[in-house]
Length: 261
Image 1 (cartoon, rainbow, N blue to C red):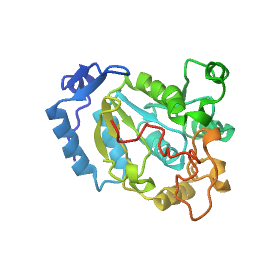
Image 2: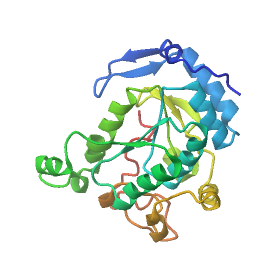
Image 3: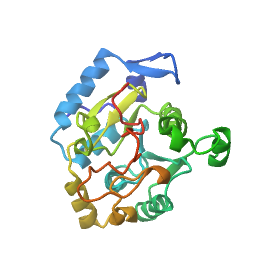
Image 4: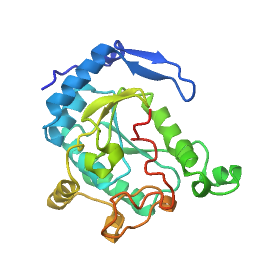
């Protein structure tokens, strides 16, 4: 098991800030930090999610956050987090386009587990954004819409933290199949922890059913992957799990978890 080192200053001592050509400044990892993360990743590869979450909350105490869209994986992590470290910072990217059912899950999670989930919003309202772009940009340029209403916000939020947790699984898509348990997220300049990377969809739902964890009722209506309402549809039983996202476009990721940076 990796040794605990929960000092923010210790982590910052092995980071350097580089100004990139576009976007905010982001940190780059030193060789010593990359070695530490590689060792942690190897040690945690066969660990159960609660053990990974405990390691993350201890190693990055006070400097860890979690992003959630209240998918089944996120709800599962919140269930464990409520037992291990309920004061951990958690946020949701409230683009203004989310389903009402998604926001209702936040209320249920907060009431059930006593965890606070901050809604992080773009500076520009949906109404103003659509006026500025002569209509809904998600119809004509979904990549730019995600960049403006998701990526810009998470860049802003993560600048206040050294590590973040996500609910991605390797078996969700080809793009996510190489996701480590612990690794350096070059896109955002922080450490990324994915406690459920080596879990399956069935394992997640078995946990939700067994522990009566709140989840989005849209999953019972054929929505296997839920994002913004205009860019999400239900799928048939023989489609890929993420086939309902950005239907009609080649786009498969909003950019938070893509491995292109």
